[in-house]
Amino acid sequence: MRLLIDECIDERLRLLFPGHDCQTARFANLAGLKNGRLLEAAEADGFDVLITVDQNIPEQQNLAGRKIALVILSGPTNRLRDLAPLVPAALSALDSIEPGDIVRIG
Image (cartoon, rainbow, N blue to C red; front, side):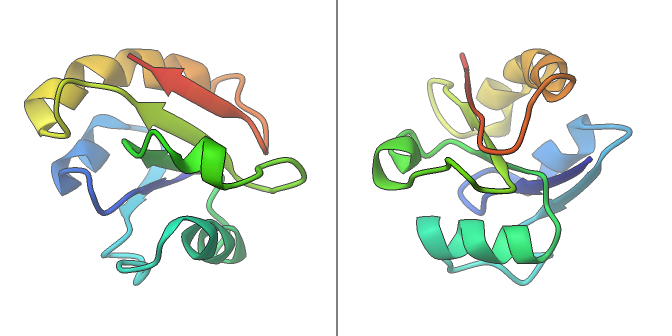
């Protein structure tokens, strides 16, 4: 599965998703794009899931009919030490996630 790590998350988080093609927004040349444009560009580049800490995307964007799903990590901060404990639940969610789904972890 192709995963895109939003630019507001520590890039080292990508190392915690073994078995997945996990790239950061910066590495994928998608840095600086906001919400709707980021989702469109990620879909066009073939990403299956956007992993973010942005709690507001579901209220700002309609994912119905989209080819991409959203995993929202809700930790005390967006630091790696606070997000890493959420990764096992995120990995579990990836087993059944479908395009257009929004999954909140934490």
